[in-house]
Image 1 (spheres, helix red, strand yellow):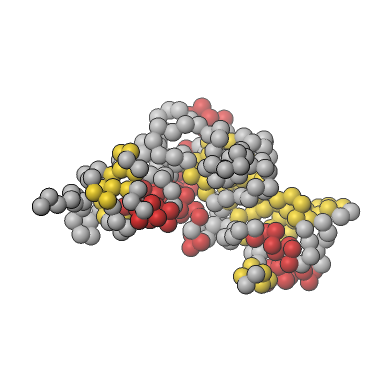
Image 2 (image 1 turned 90 degrees about the vertical axis):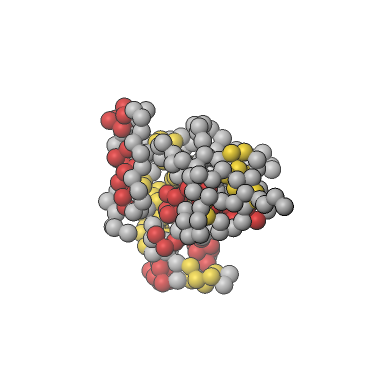
Length: 281
């Protein structure tokens, strides 16, 4: 009886299959576990299983297409100023524009959005081809905060400011801002800058709604140490320079990315840093 090919990895050797695919930019580990369970992934010609360990010697296929398991020649991070009215998913049944529509083509792997902004929210969206970087930046345990500029239809009292920082129960969840500062405004329109540690689904809007205010504009201006430059126009992106990229990897305690092959040298000389000083993680 012919046996199915086995993984080249000995028990305990290599990395878990879902981690390898996530690091190559195929999606989140949870999504990839679902793909593996659904039979979309094979190793050495045999259906894969969740938790299977693989090495560079193994032949991996996703939906029948071979996967290059070698480390990317170059990690890339795009700083994108998302307009409102654009979605963060890869495709949309309603035909709405997505943040992936006008990104540069990759020779291998795919672009991954680091977190999401809802359809009507705008501002800073980081997009990378490195799944390990994306996972580290999005994981709550990493401790990266997010800052938003918010326009609401009223002004908060001191008691409401305190309440929003101490915590509000919304739909069974305890939500709060880690910081909130009044920016400016007049009449019924007032701007605040707020900071969140995770950025759950519609968290900013839900918090303001809990104190009776409606958000009319929402723009993310910072994600961890990366800030949105005032010169980056809506709908445009700029690539993070090599020095910023190396600093970001050091902050996240990830192996240093391989240097670019001269493609970004001119941009790096002309571009100012897009990183702020940030506490060690």
